[in-house]
Length: 123
Image 1 (cartoon, one colour):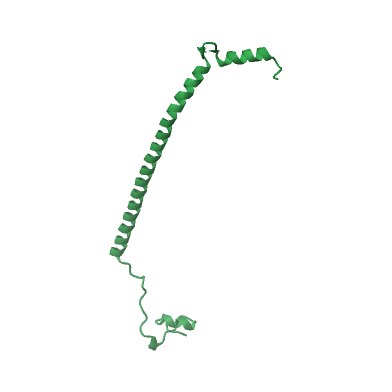
Image 2 (cartoon, helix red, strand yellow; image 1 turned 90 degrees about the vertical axis):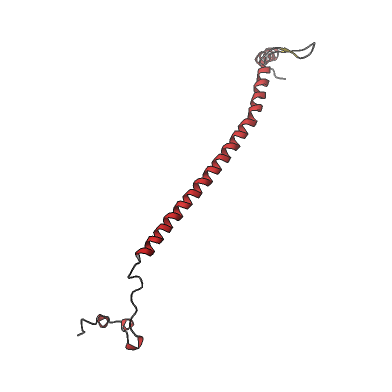
């Protein structure tokens, strides 16, 4: 029977048996946590996360404002094209003199006249 005071003798595996030549066993390295080290680590992690969030928000705001400027610029360039299209469509819907011999008629009336003139014979 083994001595209950020597717990290392209770192990049956040779790996757990220590000889006097090995010296005093080392203490467990993680057995004692330093509250100061834990607090410093926690504060560093919180500050790191806060810094990352601030950087991401700044980047997002910068990207978003550049995107809005691009959209506004594209929209303002399109304003002139929309104005010209509205003017061209307006010209298609009114009578006007082209020269001394020709008159422009609204497009709807011109299409009706062509259909009436040619009928169902497109050739």
